[in-house]
Amino acid sequence: MARRIAYLGVFVVVSALLLAPVSGAGAVTDAPTTDDDPKLHVDLSEDGDATVSLVTVSDFADEDERDAFETLEADEDAQTELLDRFADRMQETAERSIDDVDREMTVTADAVDVRTGDDRGVVVLSVHWQNLGAVDGSNLVVTEPFASGYEADRPVVVTAPADSTVETVTPEPTDRSDRQVTWASGTDFDGFEATIALPSDGAVSADDTTGGDDSVPGFGSVVAGSAVLVLIGLTLRCRG
Image 1 (cartoon, one colour):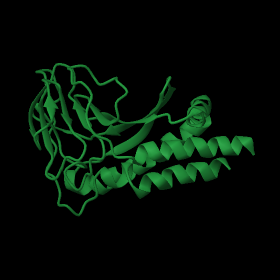
Image 2 (cartoon, helix red, strand yellow):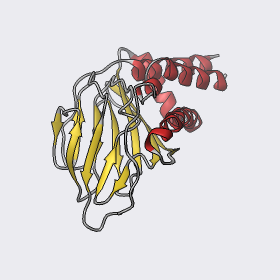
Image 3 (tube, one colour):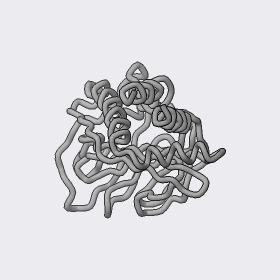
Image 4 (cartoon, one colour):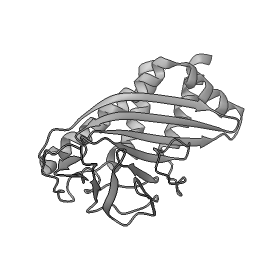
């Protein structure tokens, strides 16, 4: 019984931090983001693949919340279940975007990281997203699934490949450097497009990167709201 109560505490805390709207962004540099600020981080490769990481943070209100995170941190099976369900939801989003980008997109689980600090807990869920961006000549272009209905409940950070430069982005970012752009929580991503100039030895294949209409669900329908509640609830029930 005590074990079940501990897991209940873990997943209540995780569901709360995943669902809670956050504001503000971490420092923007040319290096991939490694800090523990809440965000959705898209780290792109030259071929259009990306590592997409959802970073969520909870400030501990008491020792019970700390104990819950420590329990999750020590249980690799529970972490794997959480990551797999997150990857499944991302794959569903990719499948709904295929018609608008005219290329196959596949999402697979990559890594999960749970860290318990003195006064906060951090959960990072990462997936590998194949063909998130499309190579068009010397450029890498990203549109979907952001362009159609993405709800930014936390800052969004896009990092370009090494030796690349972010040329144009819509909407206007909150912060930017040569390789990284950041949008604050609450940004309207309708019509999103990012164009990145690749180094001279980058890939040269072309894909259709035209965004779709607003009827296609974006990230927001998956990483926030009821879908995350389902993700957390199913994991809890599976662990019994």
